[in-house]
Length: 80
Image (cartoon, rainbow, N blue to C red; front, side, top):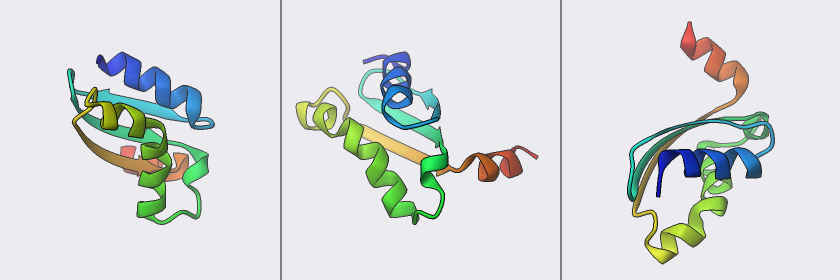
């Protein structure tokens, strides 16, 4: 699987998401920015992302995922 495929999938499934993906094959590092994360605890944010990746993880297409999740405001503050 390619990083661009993961990016396209998540951006189409998570409302207003901007997704940055590093990695190829079956190991990916994700940064996901979306308004849907507002008011959510970190675990809930990860659950939202995993909902769209679980099928590929179960099939072995994706083996490892590391992610960071931000609201647009959190992301802007982090960018300085």
